[in-house]
Length: 255
Image (cartoon, rainbow, N blue to C red; front, side, top):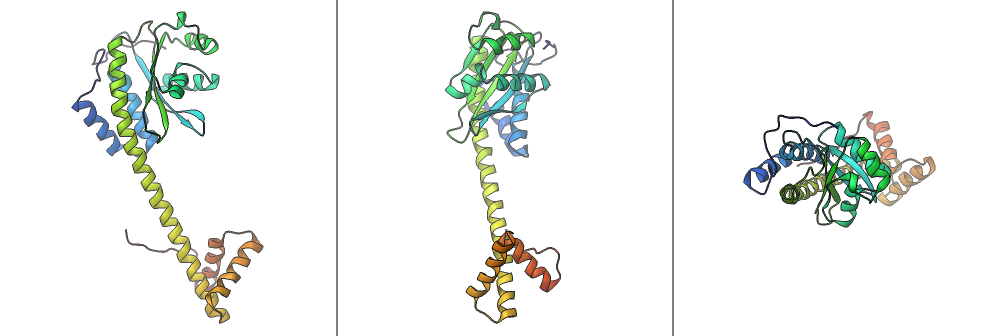
């Protein structure tokens, strides 16, 4: 890890305020998915906290199925550092994630916790780490990981402003999570309706072909599905294709 000059803002460069909130709202509107939002979030945190001589590398780790996963980073260095900590299964960022409290390690050389990870992180040029959990109100668990190549790379003001930024970011992330969940639920409903329509069409075709009632026709379709070990919708689509000659069965719904 090396330090670079040329960053526009100094310590505390992103604190609570309308500009930060507006930027985060814009990220919500422009991001194509959660990963894209978190990547832009990591880049924003890195660029606004870095100062000449002290480049901050930022990553975001999310807890999924009780396992931490590095999902976004400001750069390759941050991504590698997050993956490194996840590989050890311990470290300040993972502790902050699990406990829900900010953790600052001002000087890795003086740190006695997480010794195997700390030694390796120092070997990669890290001298101080700030980990700030994102309060997602039960929607998920995530932590903002900030790495510096300088000892005492984060001041008390940096910590306070990073926490304020994380609080605003968490609100935006909760919103995008809910939007994603609603979108997924809508897609699931659309697929379910598509399947139901194809099955109903096949049942109608079987009724006409065999001069039977609906229950009998559905039973024929179900037995074919069980015998062939094929999903009911796929069997239904095969029935429709054999009658209509259409290769792709599509149902249309109004938005």
